Amino acid sequence: MAPFSPGTPLPVDRLVALDRAHVWHPYSPMPGKATPYVVESASGVRLRLAEPAGGHRELVDGMSSWWAAIHGYGHPELDQAVRDQLGRMSHVMFGGLTHEPAVRLAARLVEITPEPLQHVFLADSGSVSVEVAMKMCLQYWQSIGRPEKRRLLTWRGGYHGDTFHPMSVCDPEGGMHQLWGGVLPRQLFVGEPPAGFDAPLDAGYAAELDELIEREADELAAVIVEPVVQGAGGMRFHSPEYLRLLRELCDRHGVLLVFDEIATGFGRTGALFAAEHAGISPDVMCLGKAITGGYLTLAATLCTGEVANGISRGEVPVLAHGPTFMGNPLAAAVANASIDLLLRQDWQQEVKRIETGLRDSLAGAAGVPGVRDVRVLGAIGVVQLDHPVDMAAATEAAVREGVWLRPFRDLIYTMPPYITGDEDLARIGAAVTAAAVAG
Image (tube, rainbow, N blue to C red; front, side, top):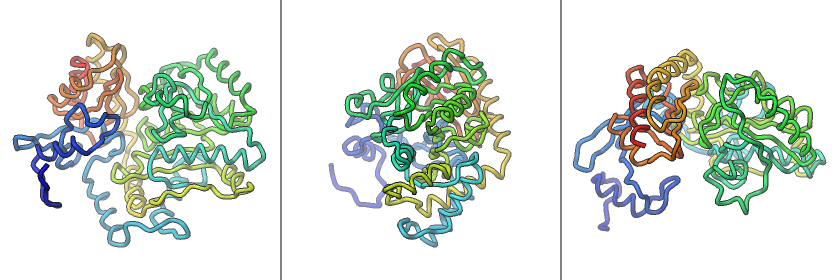
């Protein structure tokens, strides 16, 4: 290809050609099979696409940029928080140094998450926060003289990230990481929790959980689950009763409990954190995605004083983990602004409004041939097919309706920004239904 001048805007066809030649997109072969849409800018809940033949079109973002942009795009308060921090410093190493944005963020996270979570390790992605959580649990037991407790238990249908140790607690058969089953640490799996947020506790499943945790307790370091909503593993909802059960069983059998709230945190399910639906707290909690309002990559792993003190009393009294961009001031500053913005509003009412809008707009999808289930919880709407979705056809159908969606497996779903208006919710519902028809 002919050289181009850095800083010079590229024609759309040239941009797409360079993308195909050099850019490896997520969950795609190289080169990719589908031509990606080119986003020129974003504002509010809309993505502005540049067209190859010139001109533009806009799509309502039904995905919140993979569930992160809860306030939409270009929010003036968040933009200003980044500008203000950029005027002071964009980054400084966190080893041996500290700064106000990170300290404020850690204190705020402790304030708003369930007690007794007290200590905050700042990471740079959700998957890394899960790595840190798993390392915390393993090191805790080693530090207090129980090194044999080194396995983890989870339920099937889960997803916890793409780095190596988190892959080991993703679904080993139906998940996207089954290729690595022969080389990953061998963890313990129980069946998927029975479906239905409002469903009663299944006594048989409860007994199975109890029996497995009791039998394996001597080698079991922790149970790790996504509370209430299993995200990328299948967009399944389960009753908070199973979280209460896990808390009881972990306490009884001497096992730590980890909640991966990367997808569910900051209001997505109708509670600020999904653990609140059950009225309990884990020993370790992972946060990410919406923590900065979708502006910059940042995550956090919180733990109790017991976990932190146990590690700190060990033969190796440090948690040997330190991302280069740990506590990045720009990310911490915009995270503080995003949390302030969220909590200053009646976010619960807005999420409830979105839940009602999605229930109404997706009701017709239940009658589409090939649709197995339609479910809504908080600002999450899911249409599940009885067959693998034709991703290209479903995406194209949604784009024709003026909406950006990202179907996968047998699912067409939406997690819109909390600022999405009622007309746009209706448009999203129509797009999901059209995608189900096409897919």
